[in-house]
Amino acid sequence: MGQGGAVPDLKSKSGMTDAAQKRPRIVLADDHPELLVEIGRRLAVEFDVLCSVSEGFALVRAASELNPDVVISDISMPRLTGIEACRQILQGGFSKNAILLTMYDDPELVRSALEVGIRGYVLKEDAGEELVSAVKMVLIGHTYLSRRVLKKWTPQACGTVWRAL
Image 1 (cartoon, rainbow, N blue to C red):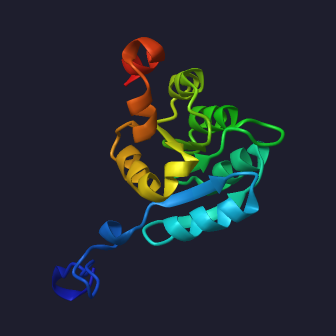
Image 2: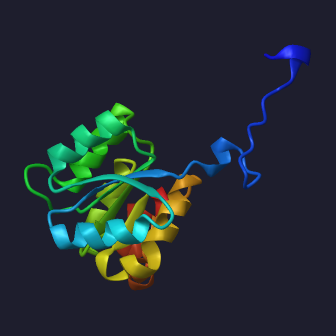
Image 3: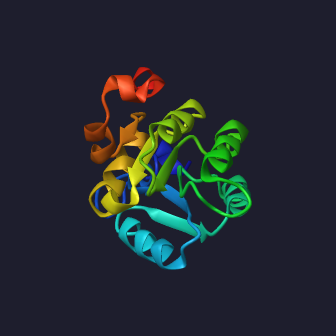
């Protein structure tokens, strides 16, 4: 500390502390390059997109090296599924939050995702409207399911999905 015990000013010109300005960090995975570019562009408005990868093992490796706040993955990818990659990432402590971005609205896939600790399930067709909200919700500890998923199913159709929420 300097003379007189002055505490350094941690606020920036905007008046926010450095910690308050830190943007959540995201790693993306999908085997469709054009989709990765589009999703990354949309997310970059509010989040730091650290990298994009095209297969499951690369996702686990990227998450283990970068420790993102959120990983977002497709389900169907080469070499390792998105559900298995996210399971490894969550169990390894490389990220606390995972979201699946998929075209599949199968209740069994939703159940499988929730059982391994994935907290977001967004349909690709709804990503433009829902993905940013899903990221924000999982970052504060909530589970997010696409509206179309929720509208389509009754508790009986989803079985354990509803109990997991």
